[in-house]
Structure formats: C-alpha cells, structure tokens
Amino acid sequence: MRYILFFLCFSQICFAQKKPLQYVNPFIGSAPSSTESAQKHSEAGSELKGQIVPAIGVPQGMTTWTPQTRATELKCIPPFYYNDTKIQGFRGTHWMNGSCVQDYGSLTIMPLSGKLKVNPTERASSFNRKQEIAGPSYYSVTLTEAKVKAEMTATCRASILKFGFQTNKDNFILIEPNSDEGEGFVEIHPEKKEIVGYNPVHRIYQGSGKPAGFSGYFVIQFDKAFEASGTWQNNDIKWNSLTSKGDGKKQSLGAFVKFAGNMVKVRVGTSFSSLEGARKNLETEIPDWNFDKVKAQSEMAWKKALGKIKVQGSEDDKVLFYSALYHSKLTPRVFSDADGTYPGFADDENFYKAKGFSYYEDYNLWDTYRAVHPLHNLLEPKISSDMMESLVKKAEQGGWMPIFPCWNQYTAAMIGDHAIAAIGDAYIKGIKGIDIHKAYQYMQKNAFEVNSDPKSYEEGKGEGHWRPI
Image 1 (spheres, helix red, strand yellow):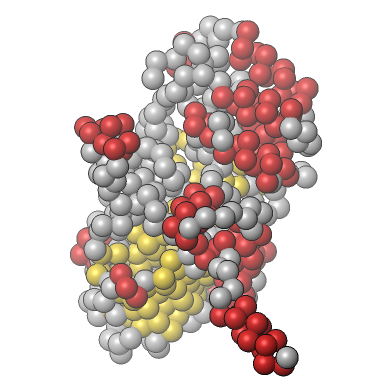
Image 2 (tube, one colour; image 1 turned 180 degrees about the vertical axis):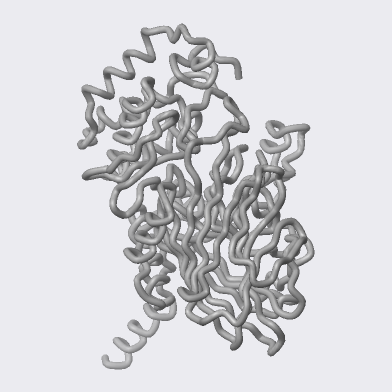
C-alpha cells in the first residue's frame, strides 16, 4: 500500500498540470502574420507590423518593460518586433498593445562593455533566442556583443533590473528618454548614485504634435557608485557633464555612467505627475534591492489575475487562451501615483488625488467595449469600477465624456460614444463605486447636446456618431 501511495504522489508531482501563468507567451502577436484575416484587413494586404510587445510587469501596470529593438516613439511603430535580431536596450514603455498609436513618456536603459556607443543602432547587440526567457513577470537575455546578461521584473509603477557584465572591460549603462520631439531631459546625481529625467508627451490623431500636458518622469537608482559619467546629444558625447536637455529639434539625448565590477542592480520609479512622484512610487513599491522578492510579487499578481478562469482543451489552446487573457489585462493602465496623484485630463492643468480608487488611462474603447470591459466586470469588479469612475472624472475635468481617451487627452479618430456602452454595462452588472448620477449627466450631454465650437469638437469633445473615420 505504501508503494501505491508513493507512486500516486510521485505521479501527481511529475504530471501536475501547468499553471495559467506558465501558458502565457508574451511574444504572440509581435511577428508578421500570414493569416487570412491579417492579409484581408491589414494595410496594403500584408501584416508587417505585429503591434504587440512583450509587456513585463503586473496587470494594468502604469509602466511595463520590454526589450527594445526599435528606437521610436513614432505612430504605428512599436518598440519591439519579434523578427528583429538585435536589442538596443530595455524600455519602460506605455505602448498600447494591439493599437496603431505610439509609445509615449518612455525611457530606455542599455548596458554595454568596451567602447561607449550611444546611437541605438550602433550600440545594439545580437542575442541567442534560445537563451531568452520571457513571461509576464520576468525577462532575461544575454547580449552577445555587449557581453551582458540582463534580467528585469516590475511592479505597477517601478522596476528592478540586474546586469551581469561578463568582461573586465569598461562597463557602461546608458539612460535615454525617447522623446519624439527631442524634448527629453536627464540629470546625473553621482553623490546619490542616481539619474533623474523626463520625457514630455505629445498627442497624435486630433491635436497631433501638440503637448499633451504631462511628461513621463523617472528616477533611476544604482547599487554601485559611478566611476565616471556624462551625457550626450545626438552623437556628441560629453564626459563629466551632468545634465542634458533637448530643444525640440528631434535630437536624441541621454546620460551614461561607468562602473567597476561585474554586477549592477538598477531600480526605476516612474510617474506621470512629477519627479517627486516617481521617487515616492519607487520608495513605496521597491524599497530595497531584493530582485527575487519583486519577481515573486509580480508572479503572484499574474497568478491571481489569470487563475480566475480554468479552461479545458489542448496545450496549444491553453497557450492561446491565457496569452489572450494576459493581453486583456495590459490597458487601460493605472495613471495615478501610489498616493493617488494624477495630472488633470485634457486642458485641465491642475493635479488631483484619486481617493478610494485608482485613476486609469489609455482606453481603446472602439474595440474593448465589446468584450474586454465586460470581462473586467465579471472578473475584476473593483478594477472595472475604478476604470469607469476614471471616465467620469475625465468628463468632469474636460466638460464632455471622452470617446476613447488616450495619453490623458480627448481623441476623435473613431465614430461612436463607446464609453456610454462601457459605463452602462458596468452599471447593469452591478458594479459599485461609480458616481452614476454624474456619469449619466455627461452621457446624456454627449447624446443630446451639440458642441458648437468646431475646434474643440474636432479634437474629441462632444457627440461622436457623425465623426469621419
């Protein structure tokens, strides 16, 4: 009997079913597609742009992290393509997966050894895809030319990275704010072992090129003192320079630090409100240098989110299902700091505190009102409540219910007022915590009032049924 029990227990251990997290493939959707649907519906009959990047972090995270293969904040060009063969760095990104938009407020961190190279194409390093590990909570790769093993994991508003240098040559880490207009800023504080900076955000679609009214702020801390440091603009490297600021002429810029030793840890705090907000977010979410602890926290968040649905089917079916479920939990993203601070919506230049809820942004509602938001209502009622209440706050601050708010601004590229459908579905399903009276006030305004100001109507304020696609 003992042998039978031992065999049963051993069998259960050996053949235990994989957990939902283990089925997620973050690369799905990041390579060119040859399916009939992609050929039929994509631009020029070919799907050359996957529009999906592997997003490392936690569900609905403010900032997720991805290997960068393209140095871009350009429309419809994501920072990662699976078929690219070189990595230019590791990006704290706000890319909206699956959309033809653009990254914004992002920063890139690149480790390298030997000669200092700041140009993204020149500094890029090849890697062995077979040695790459990618999941929702952890990413690891060895950069061949850079001779560095890189690892990263993240919380909602902060991240921690490890760089294991495999050579005794000069070891560098580069920091680059990816400003699409060349308006980024970096400042080095050697005494604090710290680099801070920001990347001003600009709008696309309606209001294209105009300032969005906020920046992507970052505070980066290192666990080792700097041997040397400097900054660059374009390819002009300035040793011992402590600051670099773009003048809007689309130049690249950044900072670099030189280290002794073979292992460097990096902590990054991000915010859309201020540098101080980024620092507080870092102190709140990653107060020490315990990489494994942060990784475990991220894993637990994903296990909780993905484990709410159990499916039956083939192993391939489960990969597709849980990868899709993972993608459904990337946007809208948390936009408020750990203390609730967030910048006012659209033209509102004030800062607000989200009390009792998290403020969300980046709603591609022209698609997600059909399935993603109804799914949130079933699986994540509190998150759904916060998302809907965030729409109400945007309406209060901007004067009209937004159609699909992105980069904390109105947009009007699609027809319809799908926020009405999303809020209505949440209310019908019993989602609490929404100021439904104010919600109805602005839903009714959108439906029955005409915005007589052509300029603001064109930029997304008002009823949307008659907008051109």
